[in-house]
Amino acid sequence: MAKKQKRNKTASKNIILFIFAVLLVAAISFGIIVLIKQMQADKSEKNDTRDKNTASNELKEEDLTNEDKVTEASNNAKDRMEADEQAKADTTVDQDETGKKIAKPEISFLQLEGDKVVVGGAIYNLNETGGECLYSFTKSGANLEFKADVLPNPSYISCSTMQIDKTKFTTGVWSVKIKYKSNTAEGESEAKSITIQ
Image 1 (cartoon, rainbow, N blue to C red):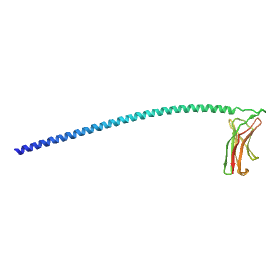
Image 2: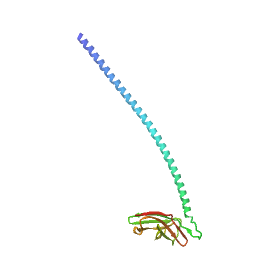
Image 3: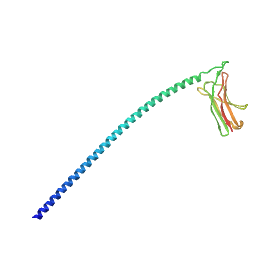
Image 4: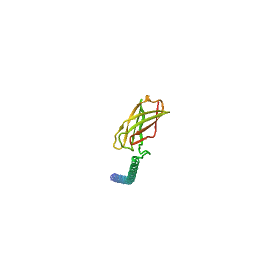
């Protein structure tokens, strides 16, 4: 009988220990679940804050971009107006004391390509036919002139590009101008230089 009671007490202790262990595991599991949920909530809150900051930064960048676009459009309009004014000034043709229009040729292209000197230009302030373009090369008293074809354009005069053999020049620095002449206009460009080696 005493053995039976002892076994019952041991069994009761074992049951109590088992219940306690189950409750302890349940409490720990509940604590872990609460902790994980709290961590997820913190992470979600951080992500929300980060998303709000990102959205705010994107809006600021978009505002700056829009402001930049407005500034760029304004600058482009200003540049166009200045270019139009310059074009008007360029197409206003002055006259010399004899009444001839003053042509303003410009050298647009001058360089060495292999054994050729390549030169080209235009007169942007005139639009007429029947004139003559000369490419004039000078160096230490030497003067070489090459007649270029005058090409038709809708709003200006174009002097055809020429390729001149390098052998026609002595070595050194040559000064180059375009001279334009017609029955009603004449003028010459500012000089540019090219080195022949």
